[in-house]
Length: 83
Image 1 (cartoon, helix red, strand yellow):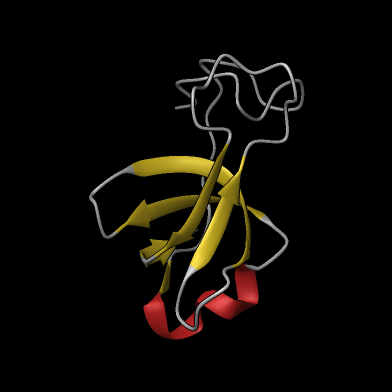
Image 2 (image 1 turned 180 degrees about the vertical axis):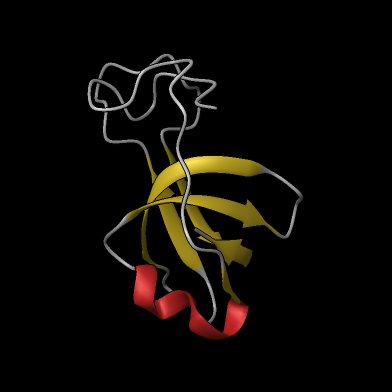
């Protein structure tokens, strides 16, 4: 269930999203896509996934420029999985 407006207007608070879970071995296949991600910090977020600046890391971004989310872009995050 979407819990913030970071991916609005395509995805609104309360919308359901789902996907095929990919482990850390297959994360490069989700670069450029909107995904449910689980970070090494145990956060579950729905964000656009981009390549990070370090190997094995990813940048997570909101697509809504007017979001109320405090950290619109999270740089160089390690991910456990993405769907």
